[in-house]
Image 1 (cartoon, rainbow, N blue to C red):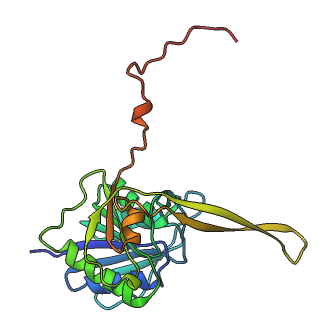
Image 2 (image 1 turned 180 degrees about the vertical axis):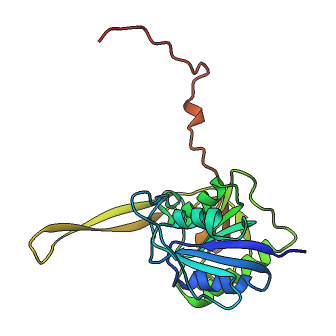
Image 3 (image 1 turned 135 degrees about the vertical axis):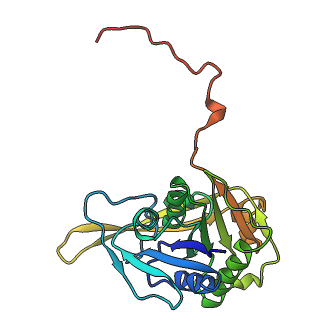
Length: 259
């Protein structure tokens, strides 16, 4: 029986610990390929590169990884190139992460991690975004091991067509998680702090430092459940239509007029 072909990407860059630990953990059970930005590309959203060449440079990665490339582009570029050009065949699964830091609520619109998984979904590949609410090696290692046991376990159901999974792991400060919960997106707000400074040539510039403001009371959301120490899983789709505002009669007749 052929082994599962998995494409791993991220937005923290080719040297990120979460990427390496995830790849290393999966090599025993799958044919793993890594396509990652050459530098950190956090908060890139779904940006793609159209106005300069993209270079896919092969790199020596971990033993057991079938192939690895660093890309001078965005996480979405990495997903596109990996699926369409670099791998020897289409992957059966795309994993984006493990991100250093959670991606909750409105983060999904900014996150390069989630956007790479969304690009995989667009291209018809079952895709999962993985994020850990911390930076420590032990927590990232545990999240990688859980991911392996989950996706190769008997209860795993691959994301259906048009859906991606957004998974977040709590910080190791909560102890070992006792449950994984299906939850909806929660409320994560940012207070945008702009720091005004002057460069050595006397020109003003601004540095953005947003402060997270989470609403954690509702454990039925990703924000609340993660704060309570659960692993969260949220199914996401592209359709952002506000259906409750669509009138029954969707056609509006236009009276002819002259300008």
